[in-house]
Each structure stands twice: as C-alpha cells, then as structure tokens.
Length: 552
Image (cartoon, rainbow, N blue to C red; front, side):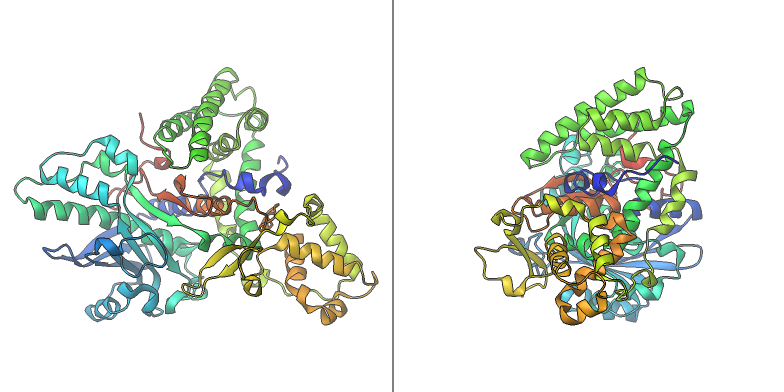
C-alpha cells in the first residue's frame, strides 16, 4: 500500500472545488447495483391529458423491493418560472414511494406533493422533488419531433438537459421516511441512493413527457427522439448555498466519503505493473472525457478558462502516458507527473479515471461511505486540557496561517433566512445578522477554543473546562471527531472574504456524480446528472463507463 494523500493536500478548498465524479460517486454505485442485480422498470401510469398535465408512475423492481416515482405534471405560468428555492410553482413535482402506490395513495399525494414545503408526506415516501423545463431547448426539440425531424446535436449539447431539479429532499423532510428506518436495505446504501433513483426516473419521465407533447402537436408526423441524442441529455440541477453547510456540519460523514476515494487512489497507485489492457482502458476513457470536456460550456469566465486549461492538460497527460508505457512505470508515476505539471482539474480527472479498471480494488469501499450513529461519539470529558490542546495542535496546525486580526478573515457570516429557512451568507460589517450567526466557522471557533484552553491548568479535565465555558462544547466535540476522521475538516476559513462557496458545492456534487459544473456566481451553480446514461429500458446491458461520454 502506498501512503494516502494527506488531508492537508486533499481538503483544501481549491482542490475540493476541482473534484470529478468517480466509481465511488453515488449515482455510479446505484447504476452498478441495478446492472448487477438486473432490476426491471415499468411505467405503470401515464395519465397525461391533452393539456400535458396529469399523473404518471414509474416503478423500479429490485430483487427484494419495489420503489415508485409518482409524478404530477403541471402547466406553469411563465411569470412564475424560477430556479430559486423561493419558488412556489413548478413544471412537475415528484415523490419516491416505498412500494407500489394505490389509487388512494396517489390521491393523497396529489393534494400534498405539488405544494412541496407546504405539503406533508408520510413514512411511505422516501423523497420529494420538483423540476422545471429548460424551456428554450424543450420547445425546440418538441417542434423538431412534431415535424418528423431530429434536433441538431449542437442544440442538445449546448444545454445538456430537458429539465432541471431545484430540490430533491429526503431523510425525513416534511414528514417523509427518516433514513434510520431504511438503514437495513442494501439497495439504499451507502447514501443518497433514494435521491439518485428519484433523479434517474425523473430523467425518463422528462423524455416521455416531451415525446408525448410532440405527438399531441402532430400525431401524424411526430417521431421519437433518436436514442443517440436522448442519451446526451441528463437532468440539470441548480444548487445554491443551501447545500454548502452540509460539508461543514457532517465532518465524520465527509471523512468517510473522502477516505474511501483516497483509499481507492492509494490502492491503484500501489500497483507495480500495470496490465496493457488496463492502460488502454484508461487511455480510452481519458480520450472520451477529453471529447466531452470540449462540449462543457460555462457562463463563468473563470470556469471557461479552467475548462480550456483542463483540455490542454489532458492532452499533455495522454501524451505523457503514450511515451511512458505504464507496464514499465506505474499509476503512482502518472500521479506524480500530474501533481507537478498539470492543473488541479487534470490531476483529479486522472485520479478518477485510473480507478476504472480496478473494480476489485475500488467498489467494495462504497460500503464504508455511510456513518452509523455510534461513530458520532459524545465529548470525552475525561481528557485533560493539555491533551485537548495537543489534539488541536495535531489536527489543526494549519490554523496558524490565518490572520484573524485582518478584517477579511471574518468578513462573512452564515445565517438562516426567515422566509425559506435556507442558509445564506452575509457581510459582517454591512448586515445586521450577527445575532443570528450559525456555527459554520470551525476554523475561527477552534482557534478561540484553543485560546480559552491555554488559560487553564494543563491537568484540569475537559469536563471542568466545559462546565465553566460551555460555549466551546461544539468545538471540543469537533476536535475529538476530527482526531480520528482527518479527512472531515476543510483546510480553510469558511468566513473569509475570499471564500468561494461553489468549491463546497462542487465537492459534494462530485460525490453525487455530477458533471458539467457551471458556476452562475461564486454562490450557486448548475450541473448535470446522468448525462450520457442509459434510459430505464437499457440500463442492465449498458456500457458501465457511460459517464465519460459516447464512444467515438
């Protein structure tokens, strides 16, 4: 085993903001299970009327259970169309039902799911979601199909999705089933599998709904969307600050995610002789990825420049591998070359792609990407103050690099909006929100915790300290968790003026399996899920490497 990359290298915000999907991304885990267990899918209801509104039900049958996506299709007034979380109307709303719903279940959910946050679910529902059409592309594709033609591939690639979700809620939200109730279900492990299944079936509905509208417009001439074009369409998603605190609030879980990926990378780097077939597969996938990167467009100038640099560096990487045959070197050599010569984006796409030939080394690590409650230990108050300071110094030596006296270091603050109960970022000197600040600045809080500890006798117990200064309880718990979960802490200041929250968002979304990251500001971005993936009737026999784009 080659040593894993250190947290000081991996957990920097700029690197987290450069991660790509991998074999250990949650949607890849789900599709592998579907293929291995040979799930089947049915569209059991498609009651969509002439006005393109109505209900639909799609059911996934696993070897042991069935799950049904219940769809409510609406007519959305254009003036109400927005991707913001404050919206109260959408083109379509969804819930993932545990089992096969009855007519009574659908009636009950029809009165609640379209209301989203204003409605209520039950323990029979695992997720709740909503999505809007990408109107320009939707209308263009409907018009082409109704006329009996196919839309231009350039038009498909320019957007990359027919619909985009603005939320996929789960884990007990709004009365839905709590995750603790389904922990014994292998098909819903390790994490976010219900949400990924929801989005997978939403993508199928989007295609079916679009083709149905084209047929209604011109039943005599309408054609279906060609399969080669349809697979180029994923499901879009708009993600903002609401997701960012997740990485801060769940350090043990994030450690498990990153540790699994870094363990996989270390295992593959430890291979001494690379088989020619494995080398060729990685080269093939890098070329596919490079072709897909060329279609990756972003409205953000910085991201556009990064994409151009990524493409150049992937070309450099492919050239290096061609002249350094890996049966004579190793993946560790390739990673060393990438670290010294390539941009972060290229380093991380190599880290993802080189895992692909080694399912036997990588895939089992997915089982460790969840957290049991017993791992979230309470504060150990028997530690001494001296031992607690030593823990901080061991895990948080990087705090010394932050200049806390500089106003920029504390320029931002996190709070929760009253209207939507969603996280927001404010400016400490401008917004009167300090009384509502959320504990989302661990670097600052642990610095203050260490300073307070230093004023106590080193042999005093932590319990004595916290009895007198309970405001440091959260910081003390976090320090103890990070002592054994070193990949759980971001090496950065989350209230610094230069913070780019989209780095946090991209990290989490890469573990979901997102592609085509498109920052719309430093606080929200659009991404695509399941682009190039097979549709429900073709999943079982599909190319397992679909995420890298079509074979050229």
